[in-house]
Length: 115
Image (cartoon, rainbow, N blue to C red):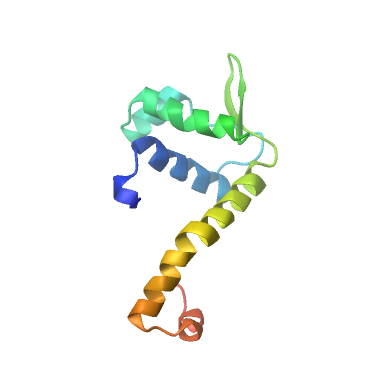
């Protein structure tokens, strides 16, 4: 599924996951409330709640009743492992086929600096 066609809750999930992986949120840090994130992102609170629920189901966040959502211990390692698996099994095969289709040389690509 192309990123533009993704449901909003998955786009929010990716944004939150990137913030955790990039160190914006560490283990034990509170996440913005559903209402706050919905206001910040211009999203429906139910959509934000759905994104948070997927993290809760995966053990990435924990809920402290009456207090809020917090990043679970080991969340970045879990996310990184899942992201690697997803990249290697879903994205990389498409990228490799595209590289081959364009007649690009993998070694030359590896030598290029990332922008």
